[in-house]
Length: 248
Ligand code: NAP
Image 1 (cartoon, rainbow, N blue to C red):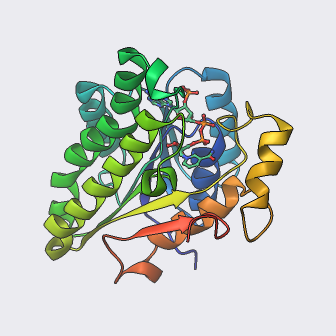
Image 2: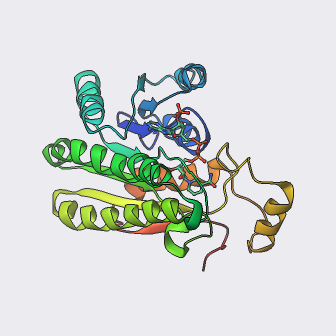
Image 3: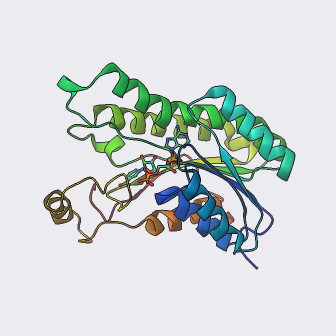
C-alpha cells in the first residue's frame, strides 16, 4: 500500500527544482497532485506529463501565490475537483540578493510578498478545510538562511525566518484539530535558484558542509514525504534542516 494513496497534495511553485521533486515524490506514493506555477508554462506541462505517468490525478494551476485573492481561488478550485486537501506544501520562492546598502525597496517587497505572504495566503485559505477534515499536514519551505542569516540576503533571510514564526504559531493554533504544521530548512540545494553561483563560490560552500556535497531536490523531497505522511503524525511545530550538517 502506498503511503499517500487517496490523499490530495497542493504544492506551490512546482514547475521545477525542489517543488517539482516534492510533487513527483508524493505522486510516487499515490497522492493526487495540484501544483501551481507562475511563469514557466512549458515546464509546467512537462511536470504534468511526468506526474500523469504515475497514474495519479493532476491539476496544474497558473497563479501568483503572492496574491491573496488568487490563493483563495486556488484552494476553492482544489476543493471543487478533489473535495479535500490533505497536504499543503508552501514552496514557491524567489531571491533578490544584494547588500542591504544597495537593496531597493522593491527587492525587499517582492521577496516578502512571494516568500512570506504566500504562506499566509494559502495557509489561511486551507485552514477551514483542514479543520473541517480534522486532519492535514502543512509543510513550509524555509531555509537555513532564515536561522543563521546571510550576507546579501537580508530580505530573503527575513522572509525565511518569518516562515519559521508562522509555522510554529499555526502548529500551536491547529494541533488540537489534528492539523500539523512543520518547516523544512534546506541548505545549499542544486536548482535554478543556486545555479547563478560561480564554481568557486560553490566549492567554498562545500568546504563548510560536513557531508561534503551540495544537496539535491530529492534530499528535500524525502523529508517532505516524511512530514506529509502518517510516519510523522506526532511531529508538529518543528524546523527540520536538510543541509548536510552545514548549520549546526
Ligand atoms: P526555483 O528552482 O527557482 O523554483 C521556484 C519555483 O517557485 C518555480 O516553480 C516558480 O514558478 C515558483 N514561483 C516563484 N514565484 C512564484 C509566484 N509568485 N507564484 C507562484 N509560483 C512562484 O527554486 P528552488 O531552488 O526549487 O526553491 C524552492 C523553495 O526552496 C524556495 O522557497 C526557496 O527559497 C527554497 N530554498 C531553496 C534552496 C536552494 O538552495 N535551492 C535553499 C533553501 C531554501 P515559475 O517559474 O513558474 O515562476
